[in-house]
Image 1 (spheres, rainbow, N blue to C red):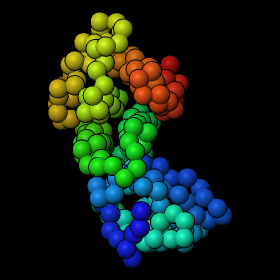
Image 2 (image 1 turned 60 degrees about the vertical axis):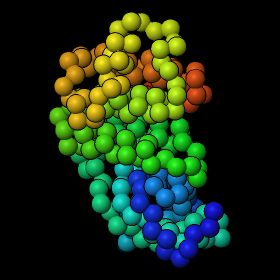
Image 3 (image 1 turned 45 degrees about the vertical axis):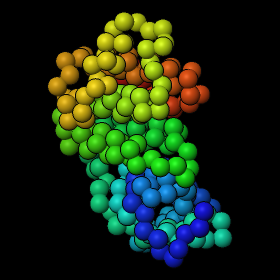
Image 4 (image 1 turned 90 degrees about the vertical axis):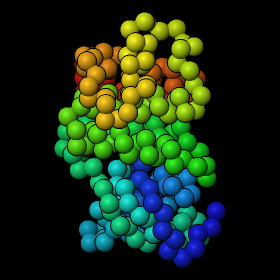
Length: 216
């Protein structure tokens, strides 16, 4: 997949890992090119200009050029960094669960515009709303599974899990805060959905383990 000089792609950073001595390797979900990996050269240096934009949850316009290996990040216009998702553990893990699921359920070079829009809606409510944050993670994963044609009704689960899924699946993101469901039951539902995702899609969600450890 080639890139013109400083092609501008709109999207959200899903993951950032250290790469080589001072670089980072970013996974970005974009509207134009789907899920891509790009190199951010030198951004681990203290004075790097792009440092603030090379982290998960950054949404904006990424300028990219073709390098010898991975495409190279040349600029970022940050439009949202979901700051509140970094100041609270539950908001943080719920947001990172959304990013992890979005990364693992999508393939490169496919149209993932719908998935990105759903993720942004959920992250916006987590960041700015008063809703129990894990309810939005659950909402997002159910929406994506439905969009992918995975029917949770085909699984053998406790009836109260089905009731929670059914209550959330048809809601809009801004309606989730009206749910009258105990937090412990939301967490239980996430664990059940995690099992479905593991069994049906062979996807392991590591953030779920962190959520369970935090909420023992």
